[in-house]
Image (cartoon, rainbow, N blue to C red):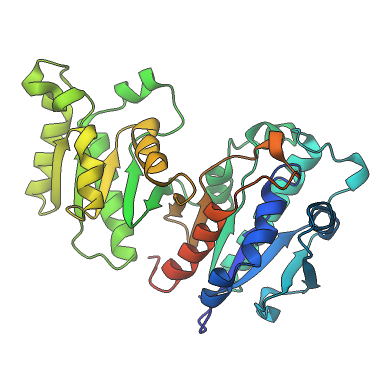
Amino acid sequence: MVRSTRPIIGVTIGDPAGIGPEISIKASLEASVLRVCKPVLIGDLSVLKEVSERLGLNAAFRIIDSPREAKGRGGSIDLINLNNVKLESLPIGEASAESGRASIQYIEKAVEYALRREVSAISTAPINKRAINMAGSEHIGHTEILAALCGVEEPLTMFWVKGMRIFFLTRHVPLTEAVKAVKKERIIDMVLKIKKVLRQMGLNNPKIAVAALNPHAGDGGLIGSEENKEIIPAVSALQNMGLSVFGPIPADSIFHQALERKYDAVLSLYHDQGHIAAKTLNFYGAVAVTLGLPFIRTSVDHGTAYDIAWKGLANHKSLVEAIKLAAKLSKVYSPE
C-alpha cells in the first residue's frame, strides 16, 4: 500500500447524473478530509466543472496523470479525468446507459490504481443499479463489480457508524428468503469470515454478537423456532472453536450494546435489521465498508438521489466520513 503521512484515497464520482459529482466536489474541499488524506477524484472534468459552476462551488481542478502526483491542497482538487461523458446527451436526474457506463468506468479505473498500489484505498459516491444495467453490466451493484474486478468470490459488507461495526448474513434478498437463509452452517461460515476480516483490521480476538431473528430472541421457542434450531447451535459451535461469540441477542438491544462497546461487531441477519439501526443512529454518518478485497473500499450509505441531482441540495457528510474512514483503515488493514 501507499504509505505516507497522508494516504492517497481514490474517490469515484459515482453516477454523473446523480448527486455524486456535487458531493465529491464538496467532500474534496473539506478541511477535515485534507488533514487526513490526499483525495483524488476519478471522474469527468466537464461534468464536475458544470456542477461547480451551476452550484457556485468555485472549485478549481488540477488534472493529473497518476494519483502519485496528488498534492491534496485546499482550493484545488486533484482529478483523474476520464473524459467519458458528453454533457449535451447526459439526462440529468435520470438513469441512462451513458451514466451507467461512466459509473462503471470510474470504478474500473479506481480498482486499477488500488491494485497497483497507487492509492491506499478507494471511496465511492453512489451509482444507480438501473443505469448500470442499461449499460450492460451483469452485476447488480458496486460490491459485485468490485468483487469481479478483484477476483474475489464473496467480499463482506460492514457498516461503520460511531465506531459500531455491523455485518450482514443476507442483504439484497426478499425478507422471506432472508428468513430461510438463517441456518446454522451459514451463520458459522459468516462469523468465521467476520473474524478473519476483523483480524486484518487489527482485532485479533474480537467479540462478535449474533442478532436474534424473532422478537425477544424467540422467547424459548414461543415466538418462532429459528433461535433454538439454528442460531443457538451455531453460536455454541463457534464458542467450542474458541471464538468469543454471543447470542442470539434481541435486535432491539444488540445495537445499543454494541454502541456501548460490549461487542466489537454485530452480525445482523438481514438487510433492514442492521440498516435501520445504523441510519437511525446517524443517517449521514453511516459508512459502508467492503472487506475481503486486496484494499479497503468505503462508500456512502445512500443512493443517487436523482430528484435533487445538480440542485445544490445534497448532503455530503456521508462521503466525508467515508473518505476519512478509508484513510484511517488503510493504515491498519493487512489483507491476507
